[in-house]
Length: 504
Image 1 (spheres, rainbow, N blue to C red):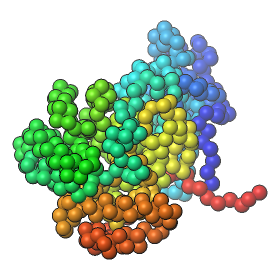
Image 2: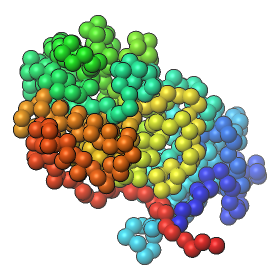
Image 3: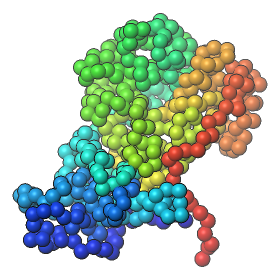
């Protein structure tokens, strides 16, 4: 049974705080963090407070309240011993306040997992520099993940106050304007990652782009690690790719694009590559998550000034988001990137080769696309989140997907998504153009079935087989990949699962 997470509700005090006792609080020496005022179970968060929810695995001998207070302290104003300079500040304001701790379901004695706790910590808005993801992250995740008082620590979710959101530009283009520019409505966008992503010459790379776009895709893209290597200089790739885009547009009468990866070693080089992409007529450029938060925000501001769509590949995110007990949940990255101002981000496929639990993926997609998100514990959303008119981010599904999964992709991911079939286009037995055609026909058959009111999820295989009778590329795709699945157990699943209860 789901219960509402008490994100803003106080709970009964369990320890005697010394925060109000000035002489005891500021006596030289070492105090427990909860005795220094960082544990405040009666605190009621303000609308302007930023709230972080951590999953804490305390060290042996450290109680959950103290561990939560330690995280609150070390992510705001505390250090290991009492310092007299605290009294030179508005310390009651600037202290982060751990105000609620509760056990994580299905952890602790009798389970396979050691005891974990959810800890809710409130931060005053004045602790953060306006419009800076770098400052926000330096505070919230800067030092605490190496803190010895906790065995493991994971940032699960955040509530970003509207007052703080208003200091960020948000996505430069957004879903609505992107669809207007592309003149594509009523269906997911189709894309592909050029394969192999490394080793092709610029001329052959451009040929792949042309064939895929000519066959019916809307976009083709660079992958995360194609930059400017000895086998292909970035400038050559841009020239051949844009030649392919222009030819495909002329041949099909549709707006096409290629995500030109401008990721480089310095900001100066990235700006140079982005400017060249613009000069060539590209509508979109691409960056990688690994360039860092400041660089992402810088490129987002450039994209807004230059009317470009900004695609973000989440390269590197799983190094800290995949494990359930330590690191950071991807939904937090989704929030930060929407604030930073990217237009696209890879956000999971559910049915592909990459990590993705259906419930968790829905939480990611809602975070990116909805103007207002309600708390939903089963989807990993611990807070109500208003997005203060920040534009929507287009989620991108990529990694081991193929035409035979089209009904599942549409069901799980919805309409506002880019479906990227890399190997599922370029590996087609009849060639790249045929692979693109197979994906386009599969998508349009499924969209037609949806618009007719059919149960396209249940009837999906039959709908695809019916379309394949008059489309040989789709038939070949289904024959090649129709039975391919990646049904491994996800490592990041919901802690709260709805269960039926007897009616009163």
